[in-house]
Length: 102
Image 1 (cartoon, rainbow, N blue to C red):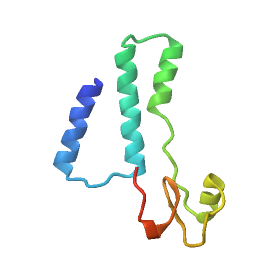
Image 2: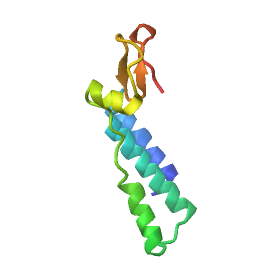
Image 3: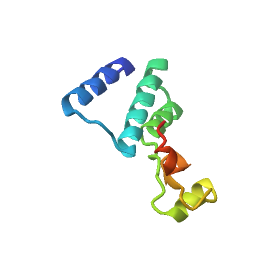
């Protein structure tokens, strides 16, 4: 599948499912499939063992993990800037300023 084919498939997915949000796991899977499609377009040959290992690594990349506890968030992003701060997949944020988005 080319990246263009995947983009059309993904557009159809959103049109049919009426999904307003996707999970971090779904986001990671979409990124992995796009990376795999781009890799095939850049080098469409089956390639040697090293090339196959690169393709497998792209396809099976581990998903981004959102910290489940405040302790995990501190380990990932450092000390909480202020007691009222919260965290999401992007790091610490001040809820008074709204939830940050990418």
